[in-house]
Length: 220
Image 1 (cartoon, rainbow, N blue to C red):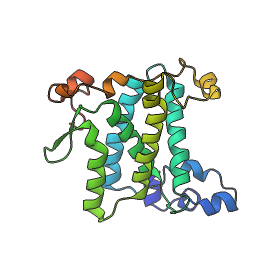
Image 2: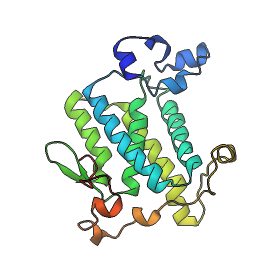
Image 3: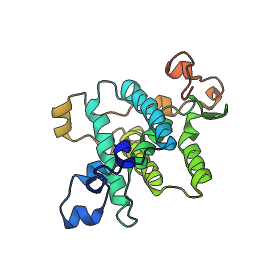
């Protein structure tokens, strides 16, 4: 859809607008608004990191829990949409991207990430690194990116941290999604990874967490 947006093909029917959603009942914009974006180098980079982080979330964190994984994206899209009500945004794709990156960073905080020009950071700092890059490029921080972090943090707290504190998550995947997608009952996912011991910061390499390929490093 990024290419279609760049070519101005059908964009009048796809951008996000609460006025059109509520006034004209164009409900599809609640979905298409997350895929409305101009085709730029920044979009290509975002898609690359989104693919890597979301793939590891699906394969390592939400293994055999497809319903929980789908629920995360539904929760994210609903939350980002609501947050954008008072500050209209035509594109919410950045919120979906940043939510996946933030959630990944909480499950894999010590994974080494290769950014640009040989810069290497721990996974926990990846969302904030993207915010800094956005600011350096545009002198502003896109609000959908901030919304994505807020919603993903809320989702993580309600489904993982709350389970670690009380034994039961405050938010569980709706039964209708479980019936449709299958999967085991909700549970806190890999909390041990999140609460890794501090002395493992320097020794927990990407190879330990997940083999991304030959380089064993996200973004390599």
